Length: 460
Ligand SMILES: [Zn+2]
Image (cartoon, protein in one colour):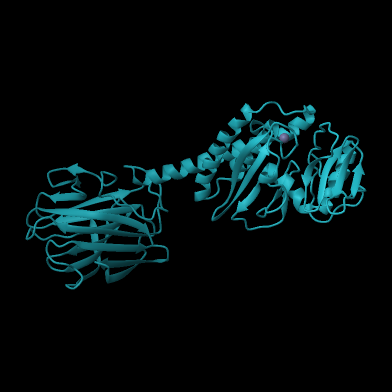
């Protein structure tokens, strides 16, 4: 369709404002009375047996135009100049007018030349004013009521379009395709938009089924005109399907990354804000050896030290991804009051294989805290102290938090116990990247059982 139909009655001077294409001429149904197909506040556009006519409802004056394609273009141009709101409304019926949430205003001309009003429409042709059974776009019969909706997602905002109109079989298909194309290409972009788009796609399909029950519109029009009214098949518009494929790939990628972060052995997602590994066997290793048993039981990750003077580290790391700063936190308690003393806490793991990590440990019997740098078999204490106020004694639950910030040249380590900061340390030449997190459990002079709950890791 061309966009030349904006001329005034003479067909020479362009109308002011946005380009408004000429809609298809009405199909001429023989009648002795004038038939009006488009109506504005003051003017009506239609035809009589030998001319297109534009009449002024107030004065009764009538302009006549030749009963030809050129004559229709001129007649429409004259109508559009005098009744711009109504003219826009006709185009909006087909492609749908935005109904809410719009941010912009004015008109947009689609690739096929139909105009989409980008303002909530309160003018032009309204479905309830239209003669039932007659198509609001082409004027043919029979027609039925249709509602099509589409969504444009703009990440945080969205705009919806709707067509509520009496349409013939061909125009219903055209409107359906215009809305589905908009849904498929522009609908997805936003969380709410994603769901709304799916819902609109489905409801539009439900609507178009009604078109099959309508008889062929009468009178029959040229194949060219029919094609134009029906719009381009979606199958012939690769952009729509490429967009869908892209969205599917993107959603799939996001889903895989989310599950990968919590699946055993899966990749650690650096953008993941936190994880709770206490509810299921979802990451920390289970083991049962002479020295230690570890595994999930009763909503906790339970580590039993079977012999005295032993320590165990249990890491959860990614083999492929690292972050420069990480905060690891655990709630833990000894299972039995009065059981032998020992250290427990969390680790920021820089390299699991060579045991490069920072450890944040407490001994609840002596109210001791430690910040330790470990490498292989060696452990270097960076800070040591006591804090009887923050560290709860014996088998009370303690929340131990260690933050490791390797983003600057000097690594900064911060330790909190029960939400109170107890120590900081700086480690020049320390570890700058982290693979994940770990637990530390130790005992002295006998065995003990630690119950770790609410283990989490965040990026700083
Ligand atoms: Zn129609």
